[in-house]
Image (tube, rainbow, N blue to C red; front, side, top):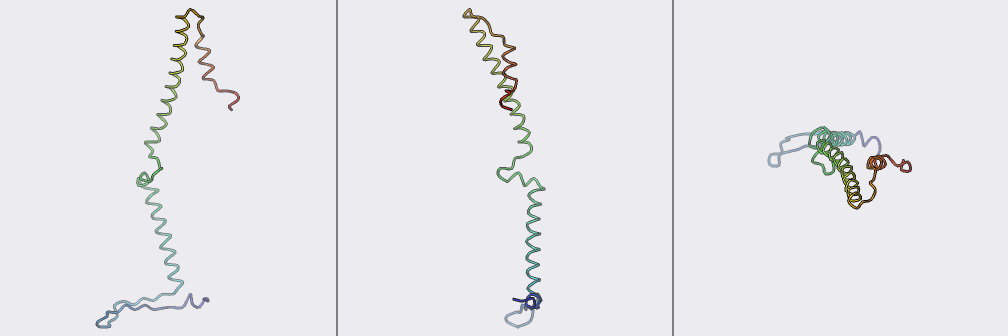
Length: 124
């Protein structure tokens, strides 16, 4: 297939079967058909991307989080962190209370809380 075949002009006639009258006539070349197909594909993919990326339709895609859910996840993580520290304080308090009731020496809660909240130097 040479360069001449790409530029060569073809004609497609659409005719009525009964009367033989020409309804439509199309003129095209192979290069025109290829360029039209590529352009149509690019416009279709671009339009589909714009439809999904720029509209709220993207939230229907599985695995794509809604901004509301992201904010909620961050808020929940903060709540979990504060609840974990509260649980640690309650455990230390209950351990200290049981030591007091048993007659043992008490634990300094402030130094333990500071030691647990300080980052470990080896994990950096």
